[in-house]
Length: 349
Image 1 (cartoon, rainbow, N blue to C red):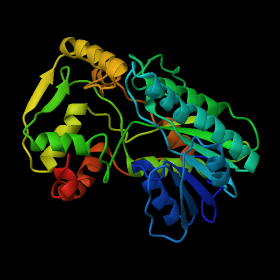
Image 2 (tube, one colour):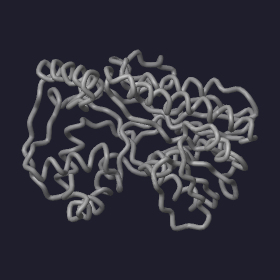
Image 3 (cartoon, helix red, strand yellow):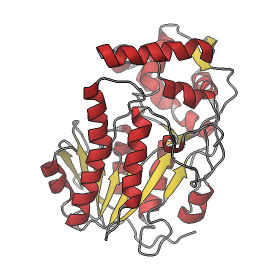
């Protein structure tokens, strides 16, 4: 294991996307480890902590970014747009590229100029999504998938890893991120559907597995990586898979969650032969009329192939070990979801 010689304690850390699920968890974790935090997001933020400076601004605005990086020691870049469609309106494609790629390039440049010493980029296992790659390591080639999320995350990760200068960089690749407080990708839409009597949907036969990453595992991996960024460290310019190390079928993940909540929803299996034409039609409608797709080809790929990777490198170089396996992580969500299902927010879905 590479020793942690660049401690986070006492540093000033910038977190982009700080109003989001990952960013807000990271802000609190950094404060718990003794860092001062500057939190940047275009959305409103509330951190009841005098050592957290909330900066509301657009990551695509150079003046906002220049001010945000001033006086910062380490950057945790979590901001990104998740758009899984291959076909989308030009305005959407331009926005995804502007945030995920162009803003990352500008952030790197301005941070280097400001004298920031360390940069931790939140990437994704999607950057290497490919059939036949299951169980592989960080030497796997970048994915050739054409959806907006994958293409933009591949490009942004390449920018981060290729950066050369005084600022040292690393990329962290989580799987599907979940945990207490998550609302947009899983909990909100899924449980609103269950409340209406809709079934758990399993794509294909339910035998394939994919990586999940509990948010506390991700944050631990991000901070461990930052603390090991120093001249001569193998972490510099590298990418690391940070997951629960318990790949699981997407349907099994949802079934366990609803089981632990004491719910017994119906289950339905949908074949790829049915869903692929639907995905194509949905993406065409999105491109032409702006109607969000019911399902994308990217979603079908992640649920229909084995899509998981080795965390051996993170164990070796970062001293990383999952704080939660996926089963324990699912259980950790139960109290939060029980409260959510009683809330006006849930009834508004």
